Amino acid sequence: MLFSKILVAYDGSNLSKKALKRAVELVQEQSHSLHPPRLEIIHVYAIPVFIGSEYAVNSNYIEAAEATIEEAKALIPSTLNVKYTLTRGQPAYTILAHAEEIGCDLIVMGSRGLGKIREFFLGSVSHNVVQQAKVPVLIVK
Image 1 (cartoon, rainbow, N blue to C red):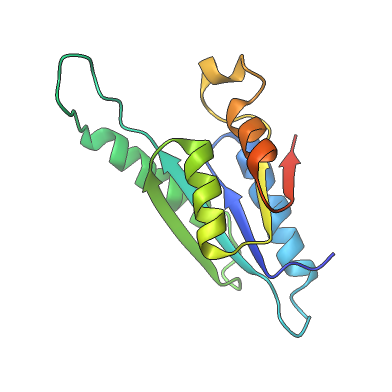
Image 2 (spheres, rainbow, N blue to C red; image 1 turned 90 degrees about the horizontal axis):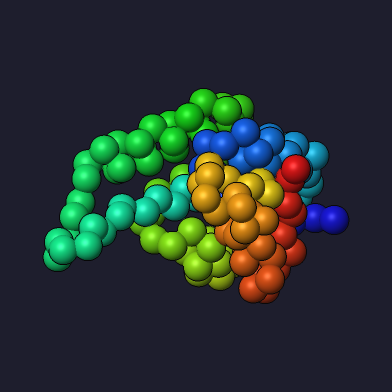
């Protein structure tokens, strides 16, 4: 199956690292085709708003998100042309909106991310993405 634009949801977890590795393999398998696929990596972070405050921004969250993107960059072969997107929002919704905006034809992600509470809900982000995506989703375990 050939793809033209592959979006990887990356959060730094072991499964997202495996998902990124698999996406790189897919791109490399098609690298000699007439139109090799483009790879885009998205990291969605959230800044909590605490009860009683109008809006609380903590630069540590942004710095951690930037470090996560840098970590992803280190895992990508230098021969690949990759676009990196760092954005704030609710992960599943933001991934889906971005996938539609860029016109990707495959989303690759791990079955569970870093959120320990969310893991209890059977990987709620990946579950929501699979249920609502308009394109194929490859879930890596």
